[in-house]
Length: 188
Image (cartoon, rainbow, N blue to C red; front, side):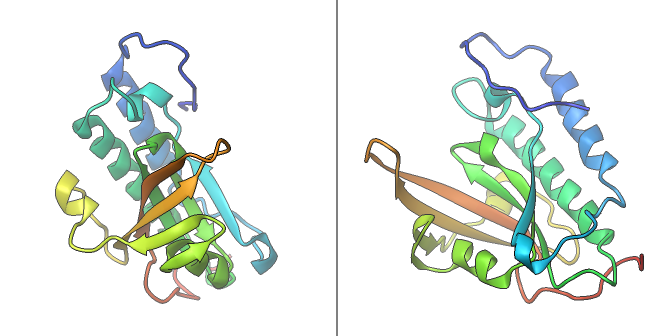
């Protein structure tokens, strides 16, 4: 399995085809793997994209590489969604593609509806000032395929770092964006 790794140099990323294959294998390995024992008190469960930092963000990446990685993240989330048990708490299976800091992208299972809404509703929150992205679609821009049962929303976040410097990021959610389903997949 591929691992998440920071990069401390600006050297050219080597082995890009191998790294992309590893992310595809990781996504495929999540088939049938819905995490057990999730409760509403957990609020959410997450799994970060297993990639080298410079593969998915910064000067050395490309939209083509990022789109391949985003598609595998969507595919991985969909495989988990298909394994969602009938006995599961009300939950939402999603993935979040974060731009420009794609290394922060992740698969999320929200067991708290309030926590999900706090991340996607317009207005101020602990995540900054949020505003729904209107008039564009990351799926269309990057040619991503959204599987059956999934949809997309984009949220622009304006926040400050520890030094008080303002920054803006886009968080693109793919998954159970509409009303969450209680029963979907296999009984456990």
